[in-house]
Length: 262
Image 1 (spheres, rainbow, N blue to C red):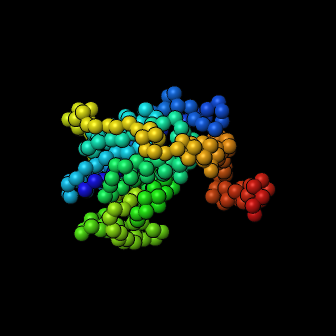
Image 2: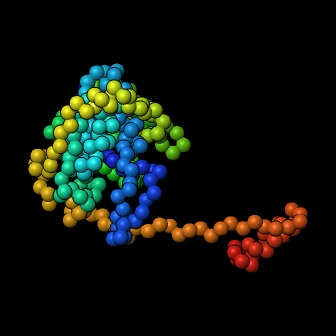
Image 3: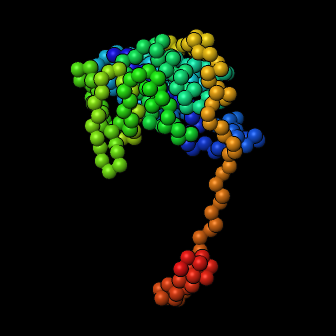
C-alpha cells in the first residue's frame, strides 16, 4: 500500500511570535520550526497502517528549504521517502493554490491512501486536505479518531458535535487525523541515522507541469491586510469587605454603577 502524508512545517507553539515590520507577516529569524502537531498524528497513523498492511510511506510537503528538517524528522520516525516542493512562485499561495500543487505531486507519485492533519496550527485554515481530495476526485473523511482498512475500503470513526459517526469509503481516499487517534512515536537514534540515507526529492512547479501563474500571491483569493496582537486585558479587581454580605453589596454596586450591566 502506498501511503502519502501531507505535512506542513509550522512555528513551534512555544515560540515567541513577533509581528514583522510590514505588519502582514511574522519575524522568522528566531522562530523554531517543527512538524505541525496534527501532522505528527498523520505520520504515526501512516506508519501503523504500513506495519499492518505493508507498503511504503511518503512524506510530501510544499515549502522552503528549511522544511527538509521536518521531512527528515518524519523519515526518522519510519517513513520511507520524502518529497519537497520548493519553488519561489508558490509563496503567498492560498489554500486552493497549495492544494493544486500537492494534488499535482500526488498524481505524479501515485497513492492508495493520503493522510493529513485536520488543520495547521499556524493559520487554522482546515481547507487544504479537502481541496486536495476534491482535485483528486477521491473521498475525504475528516476528524478521524480511529480507522480500519478491510477489502479495499477504509472505515473511519470521526468526531461530530456530541458524538461519533462511522464513515466508510472506497480506496483510494484521504482522511485527516484528530487528537486522540494515536500517540506519535519519538524518532530513535538509529532512525535518525537511517533518515540521512533515505531518498528525499526536491521538485519545482516546472517538474509538476504547473504554470506559476496558477498559484502564488497573485492568484490568491485571500489577502492578509494587517496583523496585530489582541489588546491586553485590564487587570481583575478584588472586592474588599469585612463580610460576605459586604463584598456582595460592593460587587452589585460596581456592576450597576461602573460596569452598568445591571
